[in-house]
Length: 446
Ligand code: GLN
Image 1 (tube, rainbow, N blue to C red):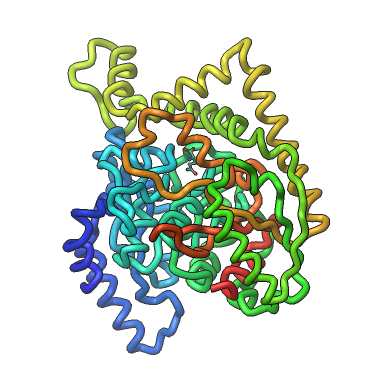
Image 2: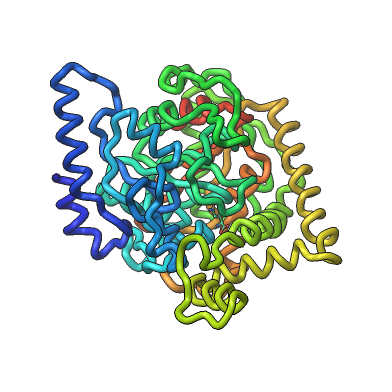
């Protein structure tokens, strides 16, 4: 009830929630209290959280922050949602985001941008914008997010939170609306690594309903938190400290390195030579996948349908024209172009080859180091509105986050300091399924 009052009072300014499910939250809280008094001491029992609005929630609107799904009530819940509910978590509602998770600022939402609680004139990052804002403003202690190109790590960095994107396939994608299926990965934003570890523990694992979910056994993440850092080798890729990095963020990163040295870690200079090609490769592949994934929104089965269609073609065209926002249309057009005959080899196939080289870069780097460290973002959170007419400038803000998605490796952003009163994040990357190492370092760094 306390958090619901905070949401009611503060969210009109912040715009982090799309839907608040107050009644069911209060009912679940009563039930959790009951279970506690009956001796149930599950760690997540009664813990409130909220879900990014691309996770299906049975009986509750799941909009993906799009006019297309403004009226869509999900008939079932995503595996992530079900697992967290079974662990005892209480959902307070659904969180704002960039439309269909396309964006890095939260500004492409049909419901309007969320605002950064550290400075209401700035973006909170995206696409998990509402997740970051709601947690940073202490409307909920933690939130789910998804990260296809940085959408958990970048907003976590911009709002002073810890955000984890697990290995591709570590958490089931079932019930998570697809944007770019070969990149999409669910994860969490919270105030610290320990909270992320508990949420990951409750959700990681194979799910027969998602053929890309991993069979790999799940580690004990709580046990990993306190393993000593002595002897840990951390790589510093020179491509993460290039001229595009704001030097003040560079300074915060250097301070973090110094602190981790004191905790016993050693640092090694490394190189990931294909990294400069990551952003173009990512945007070609992500747009190609988005163009096919979003073909299902045709006004027939669910979602928005235009008024008085003349014929089938008119219904498809007008429904999509009226209900998708500009960024979504841009991606569909780019993706369709990249996949079309004559351009497939030039763009899509080439991008896939770059993807493979980036993966190889990481795999060979991890032969020498246990982890990789660098800044999460090249710049501080920018002014709302300042990049909406310059998509390429916005895409380039993702240079340090998309490589992990191209390779499928896990990544985490942890708060590392302030510049001009704005939070700065430092990013850790680990080999496949070594989420424990990310959490271990983030836990002891704090
Ligand atoms: N900013 C990237 C994009 O717009 C990443 C989005 C994401 O991770 N969902 O595609």
